[in-house]
Length: 75
View (tube, rainbow, N blue to C red):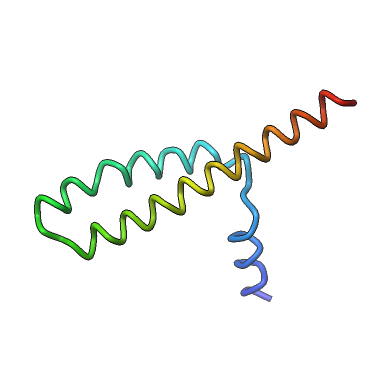
């Protein structure tokens, strides 16, 4: 049951969390330069991967908001 709940969270983006996703993205965008300067190459790779997923989730949330807005406008 727990795995299914976690999977659902990972599969669906809650548009109410868009600000949180944006804050996490800003934080993650600021960190690769420091990691690069300190030669934390594994950290650089992990941050780049995290950024990729955060940006994807942000886009999914924005698309959901657009879809809801379009449905509302049609009614």
